[in-house]
Image (tube, rainbow, N blue to C red; front, side, top):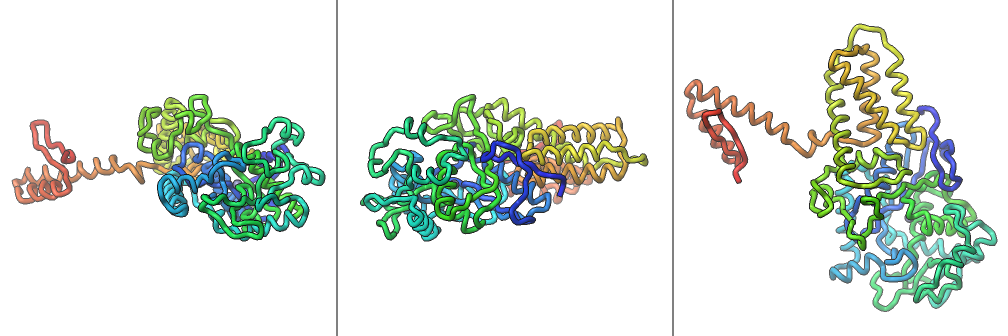
Amino acid sequence: MENKLFIYNTLTRNKEEFNPIHPPHVGMYVCGPTVYGDAHLGHARPAITFDLVFRYLTHIGYKVRYVRNITDVGHLEHDADSGEDKIAKKARLEQLEPMEVVQYFTNRYHHDMERLNVLPPSIEPHASGHIIEQMDLIKKIINNGFAYEENGSIYFDVQKYNQKYPYGILSGRKIDELLATTRELDGQEEKHASVDFALWKKAAPEHIMRWESPWSNGFPGWHLECSAMGKKYLGSPFDIHGGGLDLMFPHHECEIAQSQAADGVTPVKYWMHNNMITIEGQKMGKSLGNFITLEQFFNGNHPKLEKAYSPMNIRFFILQAHYRSTVDFSNAALQAADKGFRKLMEAAKTLQHLTPSDIASSDEIKTWRNRCYEAMNDDFNSSILIAHLFDAVRIINSVNDKKQQISADDLQLLTTTFNAFVFDILGLMDETESGDNSELINGLMNTILQLRVDARARKDWAASDAIRDQLAALNIIVKDGKEGTTWGFKE
Ligand SMILES: [Zn+2]
């Protein structure tokens, strides 16, 4: 493993040396999407951030079990304990089974993630598939005296918990302040205090997603699934829990309280939170009308977008900032990111054709390589890493322009390191090689048309006509003019 890795732990507000509980194994849990709508730019950031973490930990030799859940039940509209279930509401409006909504948007989420080259997690559990585990957790919390029943619903008793364990250790919030500032919401009168949260809710007659339990026919509270599934697949405690900063309170704070109340163990060693994406300085939100889905970015079909932006353009744009900094979207920023990304891809191609000189190796490349690892070991600083990769781009171009020489060993080290960081760790891809084939098609057409010119020169009309007819069958039209032969696709 390359030196020591330091991770900023939200729990301690410090960068700490990473020492997994059971090396070389690492358990990582990240809160996944609530699948009731298309993924937007705000979903791309945690996915790409923890993909980077997953890729880097794997690169330096850890065996990572990465769990990212699908929330398909219990996430209510107001993110608190009131309102309709987000999935059930969508199902009602679209006249679908809730699981049809879940499947449809899960498929679309996977498709978006694949285009962004986000690796699939090791396990992707659904909340609705772990109702028994969630009920078991509730039973333990009740037995330990930290929850109460009210009319078939179960609530977590935050004040009682706080007498034994500190509530608010992750977010720094204080119960007294929360009690003073949280107002009682309508329909929340079952709770003994406004800071309490639901572990189980008795379903109203019209509620369609419901399960039998010892307390009522109902459904689990939103925070419970992550505690139950994290413990089931990663044990307690496990190494890393990640998510967006917006989930730190109340979601992650409640996760800690639930696990602590059930098992007496603080569930997670390192808490990591990615910062938010704003759009032209504003928070992104459906109600603000500045909500852009990933698909809209990819096809350019949104009034705020000047053009389409490729998945790698988006990925590079997000990775250009350290995950704990805010990122502000604008067309100009995305277009600048695209220029940088293309420069990097060009350099990767140039690197394949560089020839070494018969000179002694210097320390330049070794020092550069160390700096790349230092950047990543400093809390996954992809922003600094990318700056170092542009130093390599300068070296590559100057060797290519014969302004600088490089030894065979150095060239070898430069190539393996550059490719490892650009492709394996940052997860970038050369899109000209995968999606957009225009360069390839132009090259092939030039070859084919030259064959036809040669056929005509030897008056081989049969061959010349056969080429034209076969291209026509592919909707390609060949035109012979004074300036030579041109081609185009049939309108
Ligand atoms: Zn979660």
